[in-house]
Image (cartoon, rainbow, N blue to C red; front, side, top):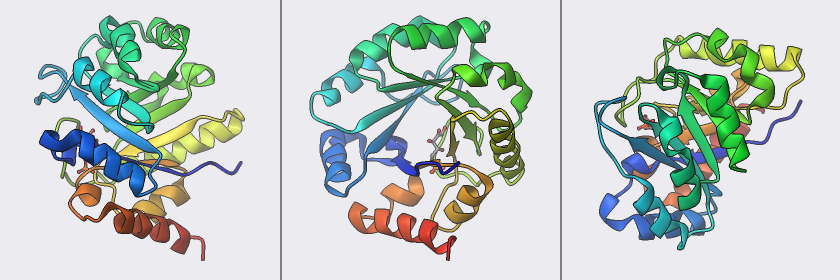
Amino acid sequence: MKKRIILSPSLLSANFGRLEEELFALEEAGLKWVHWDVMDGIFVPNITFGPPVIRQLRKKSKLFFDVHLMIDKPERFFEVFTDAGADLICFHAEASLHLERAVQKVKDLGVKVGVALNPATPLCKIKYLLPDLDMVLLMSVNPGFGGQKFIPFTKEKIKELRQLLEEKQLSVDIQIDGGVSPQNIGELASLGANIFVSGSAFFNFPPYGQRYETFLKALKDKDS
Ligand SMILES: O=C(CO)[C@H](O)[C@H](O)COP(=O)(O)O
């Protein structure tokens, strides 16, 4: 099954003082998605932004808002993030006690739903939920900070998850997040990932149009 390929730049590495301009620059560069890393200082040892920031910027941008909730008991906030303008809500399996109920809650709000797994969390945690999901986010670093090194064993998880999805004939996106760059994106795509989050390896190399081309070229080169 041929999967769509998407690059979703992580705003964690953008300039927080110029988010409106950053979103505009991404659109100008041809990007379609943007990744919002929402952190609460409890589930992860860092704090970023919340619904009011997303709500304001929703008015300024047509990008697909890919919202990654790194927060404890995320179900408390699904409604407010949807209302603020999230197109997709992805939350952590480790942070939610009643995972199936939480997935249904997002679906009932009418947006796409994803479940994220930390590097050490096994795939069996979400195996039975796969038919209900739009996306699985595999963390390839421990969440909380940008610019960390890719954890190699997570490649095995991509491969196993793609195999499982093929066996079950399910069209679920696999997003990989953490340490993704033009150096490894081709290999990650070959293993079965199709949505790529990149923070430092994207935002630290302006102009964004050229950087996007570099990522796309790396993906193309793996096919030749
Ligand atoms: O979820 C995240 C951190 O928790 C970030 O999206 C991720 O780390 C991206 O940053 P980089 O590409 O610099 O590794």
